[in-house]
Length: 257
Image (cartoon, rainbow, N blue to C red; front, side):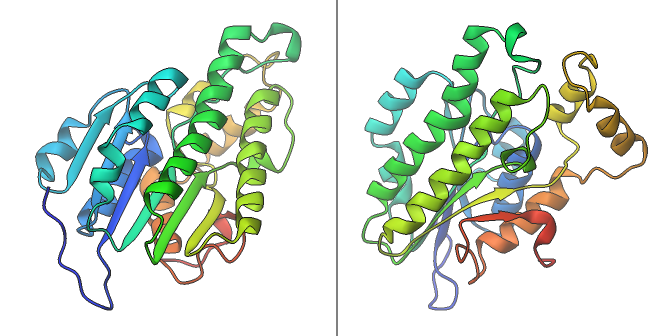
């Protein structure tokens, strides 16, 4: 892999992005790469288009991020340490997640609950810990949890999603209190974005998700942000000097990049 040229004002930056093949994750990976920032994308599949466009900057790992045994095994290997080599600024974006199961408590499937907690909570926390260990000694290391407004407001039908995203917010608050050297962290809500997750929501019955009509209206009115728009604001914030000053943030409250 080719590493971008370093200078004192532009440190060599590398970014690990989970769930980099779809939605916001794909937009984040593409925009990092377009800036000349090397990306390690970790997902269940590879992103053929980005691999063709950025063969020297994109590295990929195929991994089911809901399979905790496999995640533990991968993190214990050398891939992350090898990727971090020669970086001066290292970024982790815990983006992968699921909105399922949707519905009241009594209809939620136990296996779906376990998968959601694994993917939305356990894996990001495992990645954060491994990232912090690998990046120890760097003068600039940054962790981003892609959170949600659902972490801060309860919604009927979203008890698992709300709980798992709230866990990321509280993890960021606690890690910030650790004051680990040169480690910044923020759990960032990306706004209401037109992704496959939104399509899932609009496909649910009102009995499972009473607020579906609100999201239908947002789609019809063209009020959903594109993945590219949210990614641009998020990257601008992540690479700014103000990143990590607060442990939680909302992309809609951030200044334009």
